[in-house]
Image 1 (cartoon, rainbow, N blue to C red):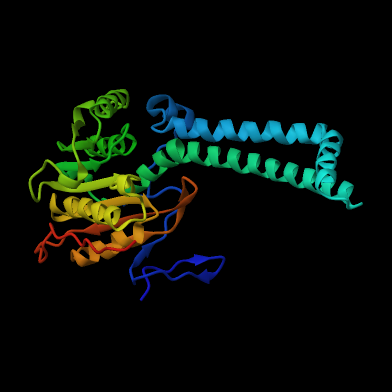
Image 2: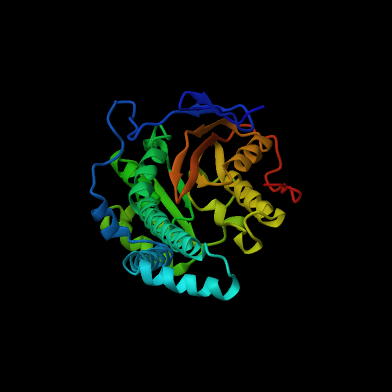
Length: 329
């Protein structure tokens, strides 16, 4: 069986299980036919939210600059480098072809360093875009999955970070005149304080509450939230065990079970994540979730990502605390 099918260059690409796929355009539309996303300049978004992992961006840029300088030096000093390599080759061989081998080695090294610089600059650009502009755009897409925000009393954003998705949810509550609230959960108290500041800057501070906590043991009662959302967070759960280990997979499944536990019967879950989406779908099917859908692929942080949505049935028939310790990625 296949997880979902969609077309890439007119060729179907099956995965693991049969599910509904929702094709999504750059902007989603609500029932009135109006775009849900706002036309904001990414520099404005960055000015409010900044970046959560600027160290990674700095690391990529430093290496890109290093390889750029190295490739330029190899270009300008090509002949001296060739003579140096030729001298080194003559120490180990008496072949008359050492000149050609030296030129090949110098040219190959220069090509590799230049390509490495290009790839690293591209990776840095993609990381920056994914962290700010794409994250904001995907947040608008995620909130479009909930048809009626006016009826939402409590929503939860797991791994809220600096609040891009959290504030998108709060904005929807504000637009619809809802009296609801959205709770942002993060591991770090320092991050939650930063999130509250961004909420005030977005003008939705009265709709937002932040709490520090562990997603593997959510500090909320069963059947508590109408909507639960999460953006590029669940894949980080259990990373201390390594992303491809059984223990890490079990921790991610425990987090997903907690997400389901706190969701009200009939409530909507929306999860955008990378790498491990197929295992999320399998777990949700085990937990008897309904209306599971997977979006088309979106490249984020240099890998493929998908939005998974589901609805908790009104009559649950599973044990939400069950965790499969033998789960394989």
